[in-house]
Amino acid sequence: MTSTDHVAEVLAGYGLALNPALGVRGDYAPVRVVGTTAWVSGVTGRGPDGPGPAGVVGDTVSLEDARFAARRAAANLLSSLEFHVGLARLAALGHLRGYVRAVPEFDRHPAVIDAASEVLARALGPDAGLHARTALGVASLPGGAAVELDLVAHLRG
Image 1 (spheres, one colour):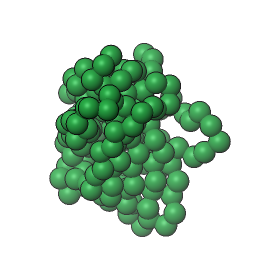
Image 2: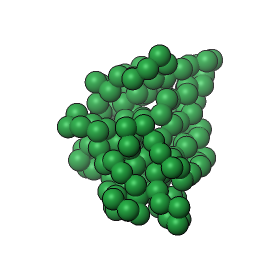
Image 3: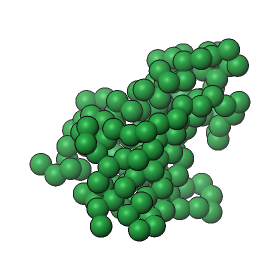
């Protein structure tokens, strides 16, 4: 089984899939590689069926819906890596940054981003999938998304 097959199998267990049709909505690269470091541009929980959960966590979006958005965004990060670099080149994740659009009193940002971290660690295994992480609360995100993620990854030479 290839690394891509394993990732696809893990994602399927979450009801997710690698999505080659994400594209970008601006004048930037979905993945930028310099040397053996890849910076993956921010992705939301959008999927083939639409934009994914939108709204404000703690108001119009529940914690569970936000966690679903984080899982789907993690799948989108993996999709970006697969279709622009190839998961076979991935050595390890470096840093995941998660943004949660939430009401000011919401304080469970790490619980939301934990859902993404879980998907990445299970899909890639502990050696490659565990990562440093930041979970932030923000007032707004593109398209009204509830969650956005970006990633720094390290590639094999």
